Amino acid sequence: MATTLAPPHVLAGRARRRRRSVLVTSALAVVVLCLFVLTMMVGSYYVSPVDVIASVLHLRDDPTTDFIVRDLRLPPAATALAVGVALGTAGTIFQRLLGNPLASPDFVGVSSGASLFAVSAILVFHAGSAAVAGSALVGALLTALLIYLLAWRDGITGYRFILIGIGVSQFMMSIIGYVLSRAQRYEAGEAMTWLVGSVGRSGTGELRALIVAVLVIVPLVIMLDRPLRMLELGDDTATALGARVEPVRLALLGVAIVLVGFAAAAAGPLMFVALIAGPVALRLTGPAGSIVASGLVGAIIVLGADLVAQHLLPAVLPTGVVTGIIGAPYLIWLLATVNREGRGG
Image (cartoon, rainbow, N blue to C red; front, side, top):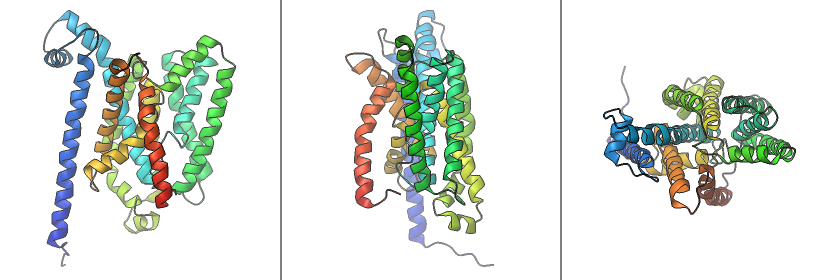
């Protein structure tokens, strides 16, 4: 049987795109590593990069350095890294799967559901950090299931899913406002701190769960990248190419929602990270861009935002304040661009 080969210029173009994607992804990984080390270097007590790496890898035994690096600075740095990867990966799945740059967990209700359950655990049940984290994960999953069921009409379209998600998100935020209004001042302050989001608030259990989730789910997402590319062509085309449309869509939405839930459990709802990471990665890598690049961009955003929040402002602020400052202008620009190009749904 004869095989049909693509023209040489097409093959050369594919090779260039793959090469660009690999080079950019590798460069992003180097930037993430540098920011990760820098996060553990700076502070009231400076630690050299060599000492940071030696302490993290247990190459030396220096009690003072080990306490500062491993006990004080490594947990928030690892949280920022893992949360960024989780949100960047989840955000690009939502955007590609639903075919809309505004399709982000921040706006389709998933993050709001996690916030409602976590705030309720704090204010109503006076739960500890582990219970709050578990509540956030359950809230994200149940809210996503609710949106999926409401949006189902012989299948899922991105436009309907996003609109229903925005409606559910506003409903959740209204309930959060009511719960906050009934709380005592101290408890309300604690809940508001959680709602803003900060990588320094997670406990050991939440951090370990997040890292395990990222290490397990991200490779699974990479394996699903080819079916995801088929779904981007439309349901009919994907079916003709042999993809099982609804099972694949459910699997992708499921893993993205789990990543968002674990990230919210560890750091709260860091706004705009999931929205920004995918488009930035696509601009850098080109059409052959990978989900890995989006996760790395997410990690860069969170690590960079935490550095700014902790060390470059007159007062120490939660990480979510800086991601909000970064993301709000981007959202305004995106809304204006989508409206001009007619890509709103």
